[in-house]
Image (cartoon, rainbow, N blue to C red; front, top):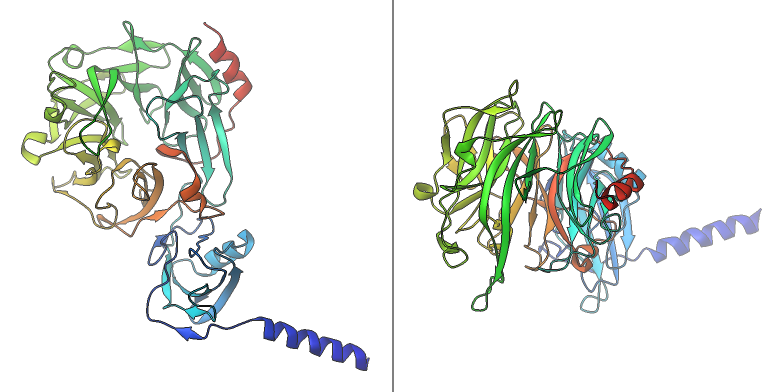
Length: 476
């Protein structure tokens, strides 16, 4: 018994000595990546693993209301156990979490403790999943791409479809009806390609076109029957004289409604003529209005800097599938400036979010592009705080089903690839945006793929990829 007590005491003494303490303390905030300092996150988000470059050891403590709830050690990043993180989120819901960071490196071999920072755990939750296309950040390659889904409470990432199912062809333009994982569509461009339409889990392949031109950018009516499409003749050109490398533009683009029950196109001559270019349609949450982008045609690509898109809207009749009158201008590019794209209305119908660049319709290629809000109740147009960067484009934005969170794509990390960011929306403004959490945070810098067109979905898509593959290899 005496030897057992001595052994226990020795082990306790060894453990106490092994827990080295930082020998200095500074008032600087820790240089953590991703920057989660002062962010607000949903109550069901995945662990916010972060790191410090060149660190050899890290120690991080998470506290709430003066009680330490979690301590994590790591080398150049921390890997928070999922079960312990969920417990912390549960205990701190609606509260601030204080984060203490200590690190050891060559410059501070004896350790340094940084100034504590806070993370606010909001009382609301975010949708379970986000879907997006992963694509190389090149301009001609498409042999490696996929439409993926990420579980936002964990790090699980699974494919909805890859272009292995499409014999290496392009897959794009996914869209969900109110975030329903059993009602969605996507395009596949190949010899047996077409549009995959899934309704209540039943998959069909459709050839949706107007004349010889395929339907392009979609948005599903909340009622689940109709899909608004723009029919675009898309081209791209390359610059040799400036830092912007590429411009994507349309030689022509029209607006049509697709009736998924009848497998038919509904045209309106106001939106299929050559007097204007219409693109990127989006229904209001109540389904009564259809928003879209519109611009006067110019000689392209030579006059692309003269292409300025406004945001218009037109009433929509769910009974007939037809667009009504009048056609209203919500954002006037002539008077408000720039070129507006990707209209998305908040679930409560109060706000319209758009992306605005100097010109053109592909704002993700414009470093100056920012997200802009329009208050549909009073017409106020403003650039919200905390969501835009100074030197990189923000685009491809979407609202969560409860309207309290947005996701968007940005190239702010290194200017080449797009990554997903999230922000909490409250009282017409946003909290500091945060990067999609990864199990290994350095993967955000190492992954050579862009996140493209994120959309919230309320559950996991259980796609029959074998059935998709057979459909896409068939010419019928």
